[in-house]
Each structure stands twice: as C-alpha cells, then as structure tokens.
Image (tube, rainbow, N blue to C red):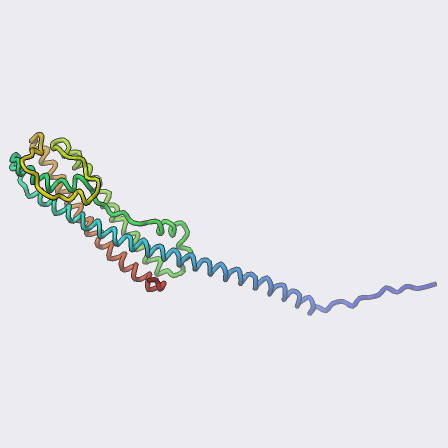
Amino acid sequence: MEVHHHAHTSGKKWTHYFWEFLMLFLAVFCGFLAENYRETLVNKEKAHHYIQNMVADLKADTADVNFSIYYQQLWCDHLDSALQLPIDRLKDINTQDTFYYHFLPFYCWIQTFIQNDNTITQLKTGGFNLIRNEKVVDSINLVYNYYRGVKFATDFNITCYWDIARKAQEIMDLPTPAATIEENIPKYILQNKEIFFQYDKPRIHQLYSMITNAKGSLVATIVGEKRYREKAERLLNYLQQEYHLD
C-alpha cells in the first residue's frame, strides 16, 4: 500500500506582503502626485491667461475712459455756455443760434464709458478659484466694485439725456443726430435761423433746469471716471509687475 504525502509549500513571510503593499501604495501615490502636479500646472497656466486678459481689458478701459472723459468735458463746457444765455434773450434769433450751437452736441450724442468686463465675468464664475494670490484677487475686486458707482452715474446721465431730448423736441427744431461723434462737434454758429418754433417760457425754464441737472451729473461722472482710471492704471501696473508681463 502506497502512502502519498501532500507537498507543503512554504508560506510567504509577512515582509513579502508588506513590500508588495508598499510598492503598490508608492505607485498609486506617485500617480496621484503626478496628476496633482499636472493639474497645478494647468491651473497656473489658466490663471496666468486670465491675468493676461485682465491686463488687456484694463488697457482698453484706460483708452475708453480717456475718450469718454474728453468728450464729456467738452459737452459740459457747451452746456455751461448754453446756460449762460438768459432765457429772455432767446427771443432773439442770433441768441437762439448760439444756444443751438452749444446745445446740439449733447442732444446729438451722449458719450458713455462702458467697462470691458469679459474677463471679470469669467473670474466671477469660477476663475477666481485659480488665482492663489489673495492680494491680487482683492485688488481686482476693488477696482471692479468701484465701477458700480460709475455705472450708476452713467445710467443717470442716460436718463437725463432722454428727458432733455424729449423736452427740447417739444419746442425746438432739431436735426437728425450725427452719425459719428466727430461729425457732432460744432464747426460754426448758425446765422438767422429760428430754432424755437414756439417760445414757451415755462417749458424753456424746465429745459434749463434739466440741462443744469445733466451738466452736474456729467461733472460728477467725470470725477468718478478719473478715479476709476487711477485705480485701473494702478491695478494694471501691479499685475504686470506681479506676473512679469510686458
């Protein structure tokens, strides 16, 4: 009778399993680090791209606000000159022509500053999470939050404009507005042309009051736009230095 003995395989030591676990853990951990590093680089590149776009927006804002301030100040000067003409003298045709010359630029073209907000909109919808520098985030928000006041003043200017335009159309013979702002700049004073097709003193008083209000609003808007320009230029220089941009 044959007796068969089962072969006994020697059991693996616990150190063998430990090293297998360690190698597996290290492989997973290194993969995690590599993925995390790759994601960090991608996010850093995205953040840098946002800052580049922000710099471009701020440069455009600076140019646009300078354009607006120039023409708004020009319109203010013209409105001020129009208000210097006494209402009682508007019965005179030559005085009407002078009033027309100073009133026409504001009537034909309202100049506003609109912020270039494409980048800030993207940042507010998640882009800020990619910018790790809290000082940069705070500096950006400071400038763009200030614009709210400028926009409020701009919206009020537009309301003033429409009120004045409607009131003027009730009593004055007004032309088709100019196609461009350059065409809107007065070149000469009309001669012997009756502008007021009806001399209604109460309505003219209303018009003068509206013009006074609009001029004051424009002055306040210009002050706000100049402050915005200072803040935008300061932020622009800061971002260029912080991110080594040209």
